[in-house]
Structure formats: C-alpha cells, structure tokens
Length: 200
Image 1 (tube, rainbow, N blue to C red):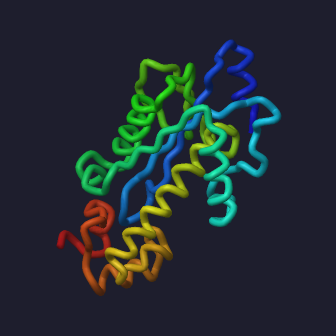
Image 2: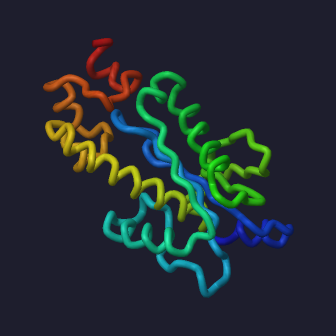
C-alpha cells in the first residue's frame, strides 16, 4: 500500500495526496470525489485502511472518522446527476477531482489518482487499481464512499419509495423494479436509466 508513496517521497515530494471517487456506476445520485493528504510517519498510519469496496460499511464508518482526524488536509466534492447527464460521467468525475485539488486548504506537491487522467498544474499520477495499491488513494476512497452513502441515506428520506438507503442508487434488480413502477425522481440520471424507461 505504500509503494507509490515511498517512491515519490524518495524523489523529494513531501505532500503526497490521493484522490478517488464513489458513485460512477449508479443510476441515481451524484458522483463524489475526495482528496486526502495523509501523514506518512509510521506512528500516524491508520491500521485497516484498504480499498473501500473491500471493507464493510461499519469498518468504513470507523475509518472515515479516523481519516478526518488524522489527515493533514482533505476535501470532498459532489457533482450532481444533472451535471453527469450534461457532460457525462467521466467528465463529471474529472471535474470533481479538479475541484478537490483546487479547493483543498493545503496544496499537495503530487497527486496520486485512481485510474483517471486529469489536467492540473500539479503533478498527477494515474494508477490502475490505485485504491488497492496506494494508502493515500485508499483513504480518499473511504472518504468518498462514506460521504456518498450518507448522502444517499438522506435522499432515502426524501424519496422513500426507491429504497436508496439500501442500494445507494446502484442498478440492483429491486431498484430497477421500483424505477419501472414509480418512474424517475429528481436524482435519477437520465442518461443512465434510458435502457429501463426509454426517453420518458
């Protein structure tokens, strides 16, 4: 988990950030991007950090609070479904990641990114499966995932008929059944649900 951090530290980079997103695939809700600059001293490493998809929701919640309490700096950005429909999910993800870099309180020297290539004045390094290979990216992935899950739980209270708290907007069989039954709501992504509802 520290191969990339160790490499760039030895190259002279001091503030190493990781960026990841949550919510590229769902039929509803935003995509959430997070950046984290974590201290890399051995005594400040958070045990148990891993790719957020490999962790249980309970463990993610615990780690989320630990990351917020340990990070040198972090930023979370939300890009809504309307923007996703307008500029497509890849561009929306890139926009969220660039917003993270632009809005974080401390500017990093280098940014490790999970798979996505973005244009920035700061050195960026896209890493395939970066959330499995980089501690900094894994921390960002946990921030993005937990923040988005909490948002979807809030949306569940507004649109209870879709069970967003359960599936978080992903295209589960149950979600698709409910989508066909009730039609779309304000947070559904029109470009993602065409196959299920046509152009209605």
